[in-house]
Amino acid sequence: MTTVAEPLSARQPKKTKQDNTLLRIVKSPKFARLLFPIAVLVVWYASIEIIRAIWPFAVDVLPTPTETVSAMWDELIDPFVEGTQAATRENLYATFARSLGRLGLGFAISMVLGTIIGLAMGLSKAADAFFHDWTMALLAMPALAWALFGSLVFGFGTAGPVFTVVAAGIPFVIINVREGVRNTPIELFDMARAFGVPQNRTTRHVLLPSLMPFMFAAVRYAFSIGWKGLVIAEVFGGQNGAGWTIKFWYDAHRAHAVVGYAFFFIIFALFLEKFVFDRMAERVFKWRPSAVEIVEEGFEDQSDLVESARADYGAIGAATALTEIGIVRESEQDG
Amino acid sequence: MTIRVDEQPSAALVTEEELAKEARRKELISRWFWRILSYVVVLGLWEFVSGRVLEEALLPGPIRVVQTFGDIWATGKMPSAFQATLTRIVIGFGLSFIIGAVIGIISQNKWWEAFFKDAVIIGLTAPGLIWALITAIIFGNRWYGPVIAIILTTFALVTVNVSEGVKAIPKDLMDMGRAFKVPLLEQNRHIVIPHLAPFLFTGLRFGFSIAWKVTVLTEVFSSSEGIGFEMRTSSQLFQMDEFLTWILAFFLFALFLEKVVLQAFERRYFSWRREVTSA
Picture 1 (tube, rainbow over the protein chains, first blue to last red):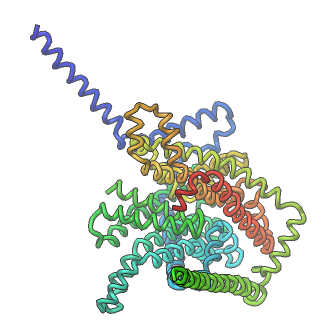
Picture 2 (picture 1 turned 135 degrees about the vertical axis):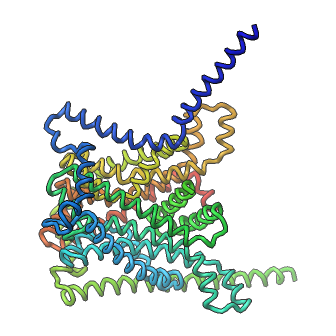
Picture 3 (picture 1 turned 135 degrees about the horizontal axis):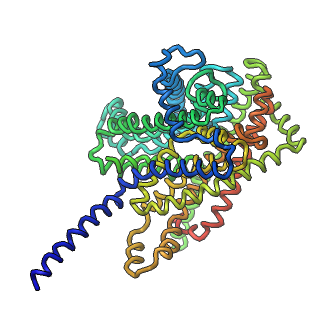
């Protein structure tokens, strides 16, 4: 009796254990994350097949994944096949380098101007009243308006796109710097004064660290909003650059090349987020005691920022701060 | 005697209050002074630059723009353009809001959160331009091209706001719901959704402001009506005064929606939590 029961009971748990490992793999978040691109591919193929079945004329327009990948590959190997001097347009690397240069220039200008105006607004009520409405007006403007305006005023070339980057990014710098100045701990300044700490050490050890999260948010925002504005400006007022090139494929009516180039845009933006800004965040916030505290402090800072930004700038300002929380959360999960 | 004792502090209080009021009044006056000065300086500079530094064809002054605004308004083109744009936004952003909120709510589950993580990251980082171009090349100028572009650009913003709210859901209430075996749907209806309402609203406002800009962009590529189309046309015809007029119209309308419509909406649906917010 017992001899019969024993192998049975021994077999039973073994089987469930195997089931469990499979189930655990399927149920794990990592599997879900891997599943997403596969699901996208399946939906992509399936929708093309369905549309082909219903409406046979669409065949040429619809980009299939294989066509898209081969278009991307052609772009990637371009310099090794044709050399760097292409007759009609620059290759992928030169294009993105050029766009990045414009983005960097516009970003630097908007950081400098925005920091000056933001500091003035944070320190003086008169300056705040002076610039407040116009900052809001800049925030509400679509990048398209700046892009078209820049292309008309400055002509085709570099000035229009750079102008668009500055105009699109500067309100975010102003808001963040202003909030940063307002959130500096006054008690610490009072204490520094009471203990006779020299001015430059106060600036270095009190003002800069408390401004840092806000400056960082400003950098991140000016960069990502500037990038989105830049590509639009290059479509209308560029002679080269990433936005111009995707419009080139659009005008040539190559849907797969447009989608492939869009993937390069996404990869470029993700690269900046993951490898540039996350690294920078690590470095800038090194002085903070521990990872947990970074997140918590980030939340405190940001929730204040959300409140005051909402009070002053309505939805756009509040969400500026909110999305920043999202980024803090992201890095918390990864780290 | 008691009266005199009572009188003295009250008199002091009055003067203190008056002083505070006086200070507040002074601050308000100085604030308005600087504000009006800023309008005078900026508009004056604009008027001065136009025709002197830059040619008037390149940068028409504010007076000219206001005149053109009146002219275009008189032709009756403006309301129909706004109507076309607004319809597109309402359909596109309405769907996007629902999709984004649903993804945010089911992201309570770790599995679904991981599944949609890359979609949300891409939705946040990808420029609206690529969706506008891709949908324009695939769907031509059918009405659902711009709608899909709006959805792809804005759903992630709603999702981020909602999932922030989801992470801050009161755990004790959820635990109690689970302990008393409240069905999942009921839990969502009575705990999750009321708690999420302010986050949903923030998502609505922010998403709307982005949807607005993307819609104008899609109209440039795949539409023959709407504000974006009018901007594109006037810039192609090099009519800078008309172009600036459309920007002005866009701006006024956005301001109206933000300050009047959405705030009225907020007052109406959040009147039940007025006390909480004021405290």
